[in-house]
Length: 365
Image (tube, rainbow, N blue to C red):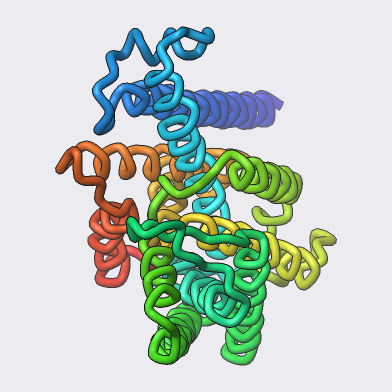
């Protein structure tokens, strides 16, 4: 009896120790997420005061409360605020798309850019610009704009879905091996890039200008009406993905394990990849190609928080917002008043990490 009681005490002690460790880990994960939320807010306030227009911070703050300073109000509501919100929403959407792709394909290198989804969306948008006249020259000052963003979004979405369909097909044939998925993404990216080049070859000057202008990842071109659509799609996808967080945890441990737990893997995978394609398409069609955010953000948070999707999903979205907003702020201030395309800055962040994962990191994730 004393021996049994000692064994029970040891089990109770181990159980209490495990509970304490779990609570500490949950507390730590929440603290990390709150830290990045606070960092994003700080960068947003900093970005409000930075730009080519000579406005003081107090003038920008006063413009929130209907100040008579017309210049500050224009800078705030027409230029900087849409740009900051676009960085937050698009960054969250791209990171969420990358997180979903990496989980469902069980491949840490999966992201909209590495799988060729962004390139396919660009190809679809180029078709809309050239064959449906969705890109026009605004005036003689060489300003180019997208006249029908909804048509561009639809075509970009169709391109993204077609690429995603073939990648899923190849992944199923090759049993979802990471190498086959990445190689398929490289092949599709090259294929759609060649298609875009062919379209440009036969396009008129202003159509080529619209396509090249559109291809550069840039947050400055988005308007309030497009921002509303971007917010609605991103919010709906966030709700859907977070609702399936337990399914992703099960899929992460293997398809057979997930099925034994009652998860309809095929249905969850199809719906999730559909949502990821929509997120990618709407970001690419409004702001051009912004690479590596979908790859970098989920990987960084996975290494900080672990693979529990209860934390990984919101943390990836917040990290995506943080990275894209930080990159855009750097793009606007590094060579001010010259504004660099934000896609260039995100590629400088993402390319080294991508190489790091290829060389030594991804097999251990």
